[in-house]
Image 1 (cartoon, protein in one colour):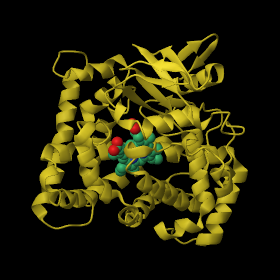
Image 2 (cartoon, rainbow, N blue to C red):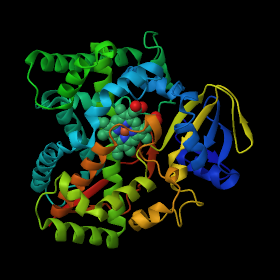
Image 3 (spheres, rainbow, N blue to C red):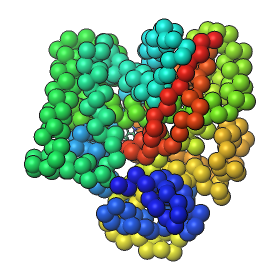
Length: 436
Ligand code: HEM
């Protein structure tokens, strides 16, 4: 339910349906979602208003954030109001670019591990690229968070976190809003959620007890928290923040990587240009954070890939007062869907929006565009705190893998977006890997 919608003769997924509404009815439209009406907004000016000037009046109390919150607790993604603001103040410096760039060696080390495994694969082996990308991005986020090797609990954690990257509007997902009621799946849910809390609590207390700092994010959070005096966070809050970072920083980057490889394999000219840039700048050497400024095309490829397949395809807000957009009255307590997918393919802002063309992100072209027509990391006070880390990670992983392998999709395998919390691939992404 709600993963596809039927209109006339055509079946749409929710992001495609929103794009269709924009073409048919304009930038503000209202339709019946699975349980209540949804107001879809895809006009950069209105989106700017919602995410910046008027943001305190557009809160996160929608049902999907509540469902996601059943696993993530009260971390940055699901929190709101003064408590969110206090948490963001403590956490912001930990995610500054200078601090994040130091993780380039961890990212390269994890990519090397993957490359070693891939080298051992038979050339004919069918590899599930989407799953491989999830694995590496999970390793990166868990190493940057916890430092030391947490491989012993990694598989278990991935399984648990997958629980949350489901369609939050599905009936089974909604049952998590009442975890103590005897509803289908709730007993299992309580068991895995308490196991996740237990794993993360023990990793945090190991950090607190060691008294030494390895420079990982948990260490940095502990020390930022110690300096925060009155506003400092409780152990439970710290756990919620860490589970949130694990999830927010894992599937998003994995989806960005998988779609980028897919788009490159469909666009050999772009792939060749990118390989040439990597070859001429890096000459077979490893890229680090400093090299990225010399690889502008690599960044453009990633930006264009996240335009076509935004890992977070839409975000929701609840209006806590009445508003007006395009002459339409938006009542208090409306469910507002900001269609990132729709903005990124909006024909008023993008020429041939379906075409993969990284040159759109040349600095000249970029300046002539409305900045809120492109929002992979959202914008305003609640923009993604990990955007710098995600860009660093996606570019470094691509740079390394593309210098060693060619990725070949399996002919005739259907590739279709699956909008859950992130924009995954409905039938996975099987490929063959050729060493070069
Ligand atoms: C390509 C990768 C990523 C994409 C496309 C992405 C996208 C986004 C978007 C669109 C939001 C806004 C959500 C909303 O308003 O509901 C967001 C928020 C957030 N992201 Fe990311 N993200 C990515 C990677 C990361 C990483 C690597 C981390 C951390 C390790 C992270 C942590 C967060 C957090 C904590 C928030 C909530 C911020 C707040 O409300 O204060 N994200 N992300």
